[in-house]
Structure formats: structure tokens, C-alpha cells
Image (cartoon, rainbow, N blue to C red; front, side, top):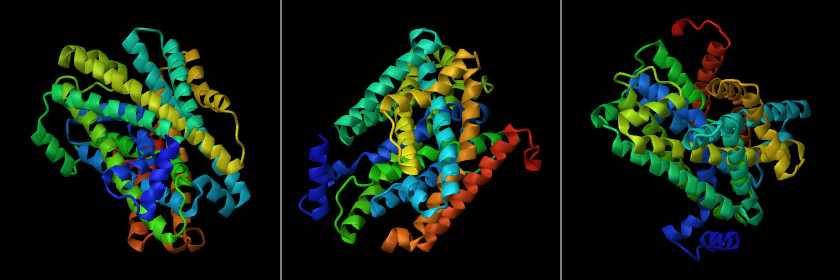
Length: 425
């Protein structure tokens, strides 16, 4: 499968094959990266947004998704042009002490990412099968490890498996939208009319944006595109970049629509009469009497698919981060054990799973400047990118996007640590 994909890519790059079907050989990296934008950490913020404020915060989801598109396109560009990933280039172009700090922070972020993703899948299995949370975690661990083993057969089987799970999430939320009594006029207005009804809405908007651009996804995308196809000259690089940009737009658009569907579902089901709904478990238990068993089942299936797929992607990112920064490769089973250990510790200590999910987002917010700022610094260097340094307008937009995300992450962190923010009072 992987060999055929590589052969098709080579034929497209050389101009021997053309057409949409031939382009499918390039599909994969952006699909895998898009999983980070619909992981279980997004479920809680989207449920809170829809339940508490109806359709009013849909524009926030759209803005966050546009920023994500830009950074994922730049990460893919870095890998395609240089044939190296963000962690490797950071190691080669930054002072060694800073590299070790970046690795440590990124490693903690990888564990925090997997905590949210692993717990999300386990919660879904626990609710669906009526089993203790710890057994849901064991099943999630087995399934994710089985999917990770596919990578030994090449990149294509893994991409197909992840793509299938993404498709399942999308179908589940399509079903949710068809079942829920959606006010499409209000949804359309919420999508294009920036509005923050009160300080609580601002806090939720900060959570949506702050948890959208995931540190591990920025690292991973550059690794997924490096060396994927053999590129002999700049013309071939430009051709692959155009294809990559299209894939990023399509994959992240799908991820964005799924996030919007989460908000729309919560707004339709909970906003009138149940605006206090904020937790995944509560949302599931209330969906059955409000929208029926089919809606509740689709919600859980999508949560399980999200948890499993994003946990696989998180482990892949953790492996790439360690290899890039330290040039160390450890066995896959050990990498899987390291990233899922915090989740087992949280459950073993009897901690609240939803609170653990929230805390994982705080840790990710602390780690986010590492890949964002490193990427912005590297893509503007001619000695790294050659003739492929992005245009000034692209760099300016990326800088603005970074300021928005990092600024809002500061607000999120300040609130988490009890610091007073005047305009949130």
C-alpha cells in the first residue's frame, strides 16, 4: 500500500499522472494532524459554549480554525522544503540549553495531550459499555497500541486507520445535526457575527481558542511531510506545496465543521432549559431524554473514536519530539506506556476526570509558545527555507495569529492560577 502510494506520488510530481484521484496519494499528513482539533479536550469547551450561549460563539470556532490552518500549512511547508521536522531544525539552529528546555516542555505537553485524549476515549467506553473507567482505559490502551503497530507496515495503513476514525466522528456529528432541532438562521448569524455576551462567554472563547492550536500537532505535521515524497528540485517542491495546502484547507475545514457541529448540537439540546451542562458525562446522560438514544449513542461513539485516534496521534508526536530534540529512539511500547501513565495515575488516585482534562489544557497552554515561536522563527530564515521563505503578508498573519492565541492562552492561565484579569471581572 505504501509502495503504491509513493509510486503514484512520484508520477504526479513528474507530471506523468494528473487528476483528483492521483492527488489522493498525497492525502494523509493533514488528516492525521486534524485529529488534534477534535480531540476530547474540545468536547468540554464546545459543550459549554453551546449550552451556555447557544450559537453565539460559533464565530470563535471559525476564527480558531483559520489560525490553525495557517500554522499547520506552515509546519507542512517546513517539512516539505527542508526534508526535516521542527524538532530537528530547532536542535540544529538554537542554543543547546534552550533545546533541552524545549524538549522537556514539549515532552510534558505530549503527556498532557495524551492525558486528555486517553481519558476521553476511556470515559466514552465506560459510559457506552457500563464498565469501570479503569477498564475503559485498558481497552483504549490495547486499541491504540494495535493501531500504532500498523506503522511498521508503512505510513499508508496508519493514515487509512486514522482517516476512518475521523470519518466516523464526522458521520456521528452529521447524525447529531440531523436529529437535533437546529435553528439554522441563528447558527448562521453566530458564525459571522462576533459577539461576547458577557465575561463568561469571553472565558469560554479563550478556552476554545487556547486549546485549538495543539503543540504536538505543529511538531508532528512537519515530521509527517518530511521525506514523504522524493523531491529533486524546487519546481517539484512547489508542486507538492500546492497539493499540501489544499489538503490542509480541506482537512482542517472538516475538523472545523465537526467542532461547529458540537457547538450546534449542544446549543440545540441544552441551551434552553439546561444551560448549566458543562461535563461530558452530564451531556451524555441528558441527551437520551432530550434527543433520544440514537443521539446519545452517536455522541459516545464519536467520543471514543476521537479519544482513540487522538491518543495514537499524540504518541506519534511524542516519539517524533524525542527523536528530533535528543536523537533518541525508544521502543513503541515504552513510548505508549510513558504517555498513558499520567492517565492511569489520575484514575488510580480517584481524581475527577473532567478536572484532569481541564488541567491538561492548562499545561498545553504553557507549552504552546515552544512550537509556535520556533516555527515562526525558522520559516523566515533563508538559510533554512531558501527560496521558500513565506511572503511578508503570510508571516504577518502568522505573527498576528500567534499573538491572538498566546495572548488568550495567557488569559486562560491567569484565570487557572487565580490572577485577576480586569476585563474578565
